[in-house]
Image 1 (tube, rainbow, N blue to C red):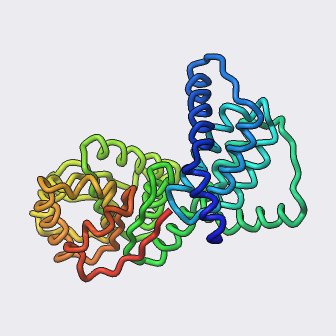
Image 2: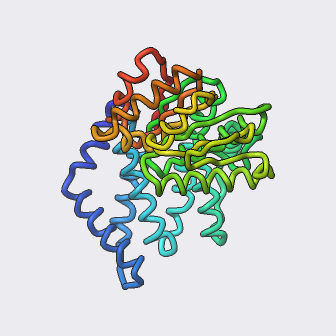
Length: 314
């Protein structure tokens, strides 16, 4: 994005007119969700849609996110009254590689027909082909596609993106594929809470079931004695994983630290450090770290001081 457009985006974002229009839009969005009457005039819709298009082109993460929020609310609140919003949204989604939202638009508004130029249509199809992975049953966003390529390269990766970006789904899909195509492998997945143990375990089970390998894969969430299946996911907090490591006979091929910003607090940081040190001492895993904000990227610098991470931000 040019300096002119960046300054324009900043001026719009900080203007009183934009703040007034977004307040009106948010009020209408709330009323829409509770079934109350509301009205957003064509003037506000046009101005907010213009702002969203400019924000989408920004290099700043916060500004781009503002554009996606405004566009999402406009679609919910005004798309039926002003259907011209839909082809504009479709174009923005395709340009930014957001193909899941394109599919959602088609399902929600099948009655709205529009056509792009042959050149623009070819661009979209080419973009879609680039974001298609044969091992997955859905088209990736640009961020997901870049993250997937980082993962399959075998690099150690730190990925930063909000929860809605689908980073965990991509990482788990990658790990399922890796274990499925191996003769045997162990993956350690560190999460901050018991609730996330259940959530992540459920996602792994569903992905394995979709690929008909749920009988081949074991998901271990509680430390125990005895042997494990050749292809096992250990989904645990650092406390539980540290207990597993005391066995001394576990080799991990993959270490995925999910919601990493919630694991590194002072009260649990020492045990986390010891757990990771033990894994690295006994194994040489591919390390994958996921978090919602770049503010936490350096939290693991002392633990992984000799690891060169490839950083992937949304």
